[in-house]
Image 1: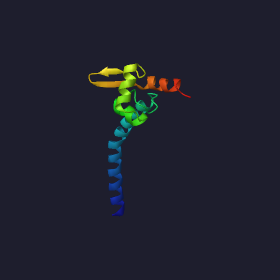
Image 2: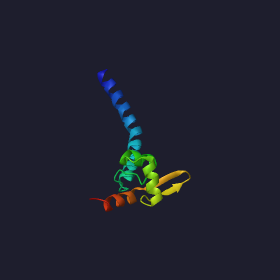
Image 3: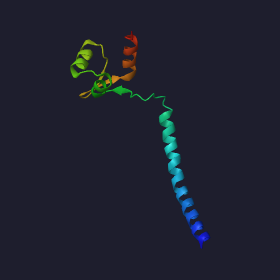
Image 4: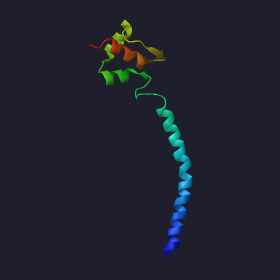
Amino acid sequence: MKKDVKKKKLSFLMKVKKMIDPVVLKLETIDSKINSRGNDGRPTYYRNEDLKKIFGLSPNTIIKYRQTGILPYSKLGEIFLYDSSQIEKILEENKS
């Protein structure tokens, strides 16, 4: 009887494995696509909230930097977007 129970468990596990394998394969494919982008973890664009959190800028400072041209931006509707590569360049240029 123990052999019969073991066979049923093994059969069940094999069925589950057959169902899970395609899901795992899809997840691995998605993961490899995400990792192959060359993204270093930072977003392509920052928003005002990101600049406040990451760099400790106040809303007035962000507005002043935009208006004076220090901070290049794109506007999508009412949302201001800041290219992270341009911000990286600004930081590098002002490194002391």
